[in-house]
Image 1 (cartoon, rainbow, N blue to C red):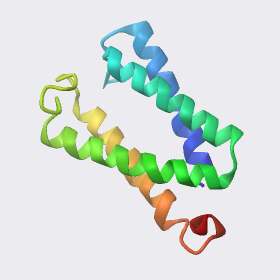
Image 2 (image 1 turned 90 degrees about the horizontal axis):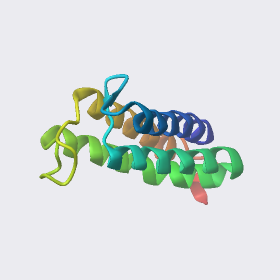
Image 3 (image 1 turned 135 degrees about the horizontal axis):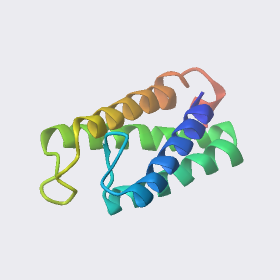
Length: 122
């Protein structure tokens, strides 16, 4: 499941990033600042690489890192949408919800779902 999560998030984030560069300020209700677009493209490419070109073990490791990172971004975003002025202040609720959902699903798939499997020991 971690591999599928990496594949799906890779495609979605890459598309969001590319659409952000093409369309400008907002894509489907999500903020589209240049830094955010670059981040989405990079994370999308990481997701595609891990999801399609690497094995299950690497996918679990990547999701174990990215899941909590997405959660952290969501929590900080809810508390301070501009991350103390370091990030674009125009982040909307949709951005925070997306980060929260990616964080929860990623953390679950990276840790809880892998418990007891061979991938959890690697």
